[in-house]
Amino acid sequence: MEKRVKRKQLAVLVEDSPGVLTHVSGLISRRGYNIESIAASKTEKDNVTRISLVVQVTDDWQLEQIMAQIEKLVQVYRVVHLSKAGSMSRELALVKIKSSDEMRQEIMSVVEVFHGHIIDFNAVSMVIEVTNDSRKIDSFCDIMQKYGIIEIIRTGEISLSVEPISFTEFI
Image (cartoon, rainbow, N blue to C red; front, side):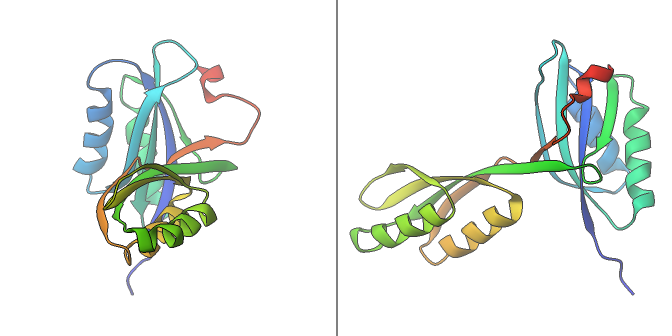
């Protein structure tokens, strides 16, 4: 029987220096695990970068191995499993679709349901911005297929704990 793949969210606080993102992603891929999404940005603390990862694992042992290996890297301050704690996740997508005068109103209604924004349009296409959890973004993209997706870009999932503390307080 094949094991079900689970998506797990990690927050990795690292030293803000060149090559750290490459080290973290390389370590995970060298061990044969898939990174579904990865995003990095500055934090509220100087010289600290936060890497948001969504990894695919089949059991908790694999996740523990990934976290233990990441924690061994010199530039890593902390690794937090956000799927376990209470957290919120969002992803941003920009979707360019075909449009015509006849379809425009229908498309605008769908965009409104998903709380999206039309950020550009012309006689033959429009660009829509949608921010939501990954499943809602997937649903939006599925619906937009019928209009004809020209181009799409997604940021990858970012997550934040709902606890009233910052993970950088501990470094």
